[in-house]
Image (cartoon, rainbow, N blue to C red; front, side, top):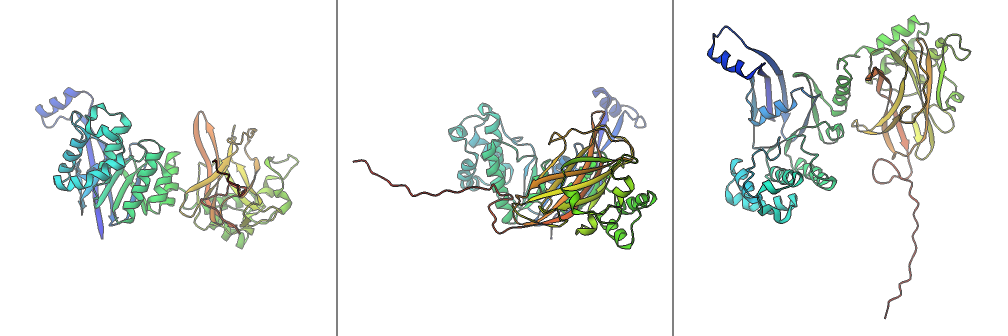
Length: 477
């Protein structure tokens, strides 16, 4: 059963160069237009099932807040329709309905009445609201005397404690100090478990992955896609760097053709694995190659490995790779191989917790790059980024890469993640004329299983050393 149904919603605003143009257009000939149309939303459709948490993400100006305001009835669509089944509480603009001359208590009653609650019903809710807001005796003072923190705390406490069927949240979970934010997230989790339908907009991708059952991705008013949080966040990151979010569907085939042309055509098994991982080539590399750290550079005639031999070296042939990995970038460089090595230098998908490991990647440059950046990231199965680093963070001094160069990059570290399954992502990026550019990213290309005989709380082990001593207590007489 759907709690919210959004059907082909379009929202158009009329923009005028000068305020007087609005009046002249209204009074003048109907045939003469003095405005231009701005489409905040263009035929957006999606459903929100009852009891689920749905995130709406996109860059600034994508129409996220507009669709929430249409759902709550603050705005009406130009075309299309929205059907909402149940009572709605909205955290859009905190405190927007407050009268600054009224006290906190008076504003609670007034807003409760606006939401359809009787005075007696609000009296029953007030103790919980005041306990959550934690503003003390200030609740009996006019809200115009509140600090900004106190104001939003009261507004949030009121909106989230009225037990709605549907809760609409727009960038409202970052209010107050860290302790109040933790309380907000705990309350959100509590009402989510009770079956409240939640629609949330936030730029915090960690919250999207942690709380949402489904994510809707918008871009410049257009509906792009909807689906699992991890996948939608990956598509959103493509939009952030200016790439077509649906680019890369045939990335494995394209890279395979390029590698074949360069002389590194894969055989039957290698081609199948290349199609699956989005990385071309064939063959295996000796484990001794994993011992080094840092960045090695190889090019035609350089005296090291040739570009052809680097391309044909296939660490991925000895690993379990993800058939649905996301591969995208502008093509200035290609990640042509990825390897994971244990503390004995062996290629493997399984690493013992507490042991040293090395992640390696090989990158071939299709054009010169003045300052390439190489990176890796570990994510959990939901897509939550747990840890990672890059050569810029590690202050590795990079030489410019020339067209045709192949770089081999090693990241050596101790595996302190808890036992379980994780996804490894790799990237090659840069800054060109002050703009961030993605050359190539491989998201979730390899699965890593951490084997552990002892897990602690959370996602990683702090390697605590515990000392317990029995003290002799001597009472004073």
